Image (cartoon, rainbow, N blue to C red; front, side, top):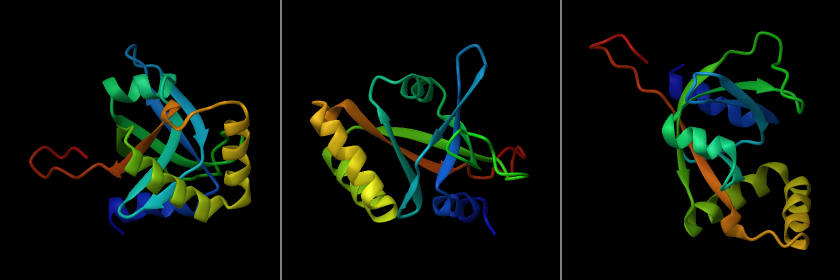
Amino acid sequence: MTDSTALLALADEQYVLLTTTRRSGVAVPTPVWVARDGDTLVVTTGAESGKVKRMRHTPRVTLQACDRAGTPHGAAPVFEASATVHDDAESRERLDAALSEKYGVQYATIRAMGKLRGRRANESVVVRLVAHACRSDSGLT
């Protein structure tokens, strides 16, 4: 199984632990919903969230299967990935379709509650996650 295939298998999990890194080097784990969109994983978060700020300066993140509280499942493997932040309408539409298909009524309820609270679509962003490519010249992943 390639790194990319193994990472994409996380789309079958209810929650994954997305760990970003502060400039100080401190890891910040957050449980998130995740879905597959083509050959990437996607998650959503607030446009002004700490996760977004951290990913913009350090796009390297880790992912691990976890429960709702962020507790990793047993010996679930940790995957390294690169995160890119997208705030365009097409990315949001694709994310909505992927999360709606996976989470169904749960996602629809969350979206409806956000609209009732006056939350606009541009207040959230799409985070695309891809496995790090292996570099044979340095041995780094």
